[in-house]
Length: 285
Length: 345
Image (cartoon, rainbow over all chains, first blue to last red; front, side):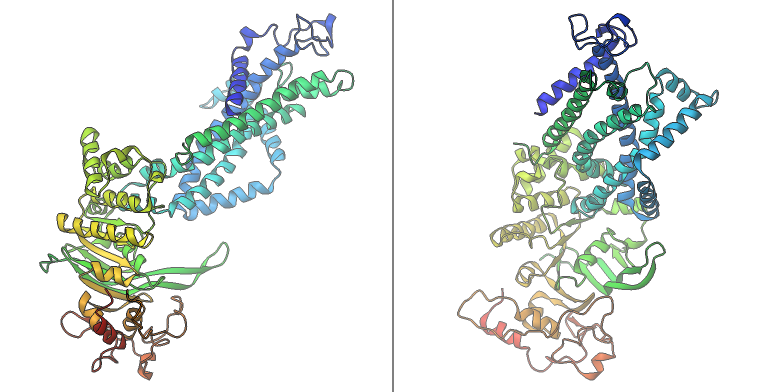
């Protein structure tokens, strides 16, 4: 299953990366003569209400989904893992403050918070005209608002990672091999890097494979309600949203992006399971 | 064993209290668990001091505090004349080469994600003792010293049995050429047949590398086998300390007597009167006044409730914290039986 998942993911990534070269049409090219066109040789999965090629739009949509899922996950891990390790290993006031902050954020509905932050960033980023952060404005502009989504998702998501990693670190801190390393004179940085990190790697990988689909869903959700990527740039979420209007007459406009989305999420889960087993020396056989 | 009388480690008035707190955000201290309360002892170079007592009496904590894996509440520990508790970070790191620990649980004391070679090589790297080929050679040498094969270096800990894992832990401790090894119940988690092998290994290593052991255990026959001297702990305090033979043949503290009577005799025909102590171990949060053992002592006097017993030398390096001395004139029951049978041993 993991191999099949990996193959499918590879295909999606390839399609996303090579979309400008591989896609039969540009994502915004309209052919008003074949609106709601059925699959033909020139349009393999048909066209949408504006006569745009669905296959091409799916491939461009993969770019959005993949980049949001991957960059948000990387950002979240890059911040959450070290913070969680430090909080769990050192404990004390820092740990207490972090956990209370997580509790507060948890009390606010996730999507509400993301929508708030996303709106905030969409409004604020274009006003950054100079200073050290001007590249953020350029990035957001150049990616049709994807940067704002990624920032909003990561800003909420890293707390989750930090909390999980912190719990693992807390449990590992009192294990005797950590005590042994301390009695050998290992410095804290070495203990966290060589002893804690490899032992939290398995749950982190599992978590990452769940985070990517989470972010993809969140992006699709935001796009579905019109807050995500701005048209005509397609994302799987916006495509589903657009297709919903005509679901009774042309269900394939919803089914195609939904199927790709579901298959991607499933593949990620399979690959995550496979990775976890492969990385565990005890399971090795 | 080869003890030339020079004191390697001297612990004076060691205390370790754990605060008991109440409250959600503003935690106030409402008491303290007195895990170790005013413990003093010394170990001579090349000697093995056994530290025995039931679970929760503070023997493990004592070992960990000496290694500064936990910070002491009060007291001092002189290692070759230097107070371990006053060392700065860098000095402490250097001192860690001289003091090592072997843990009780061979399953949790080895990082499951490191190969055996990495585990044993880690101390070499931390202290810049060996790198590259030299490190590999040292690791293989250490594996052979503890009775494993050099090719085991590439395997993971889960591929080994408990006894083999404990050998790996010993090899890791030996890697830095320590002077003192604190063995925290090193054989308690092993099968009896494996226990003897590991104990013999520890004894051989002691001879070969002139090691000094603080041997923490609750199994008296194991402790008698390996120790030169034995200290008995009860509820955070040492109640009796003497040469191993002296302690077994002439116990002076009522608690020691009860402990000795619990050692099984390896002879099914022998019957011995077990001394069953009444009640449970009191809480170390609010230990009894006076002598901590008076609530369960068969020989307790009214004065035991109020007067804290002094820890006195009654001759020949035999220390005991019991001014009543119920066995000063007659031998204790446990000692009489031990004498008659030649057991325990």
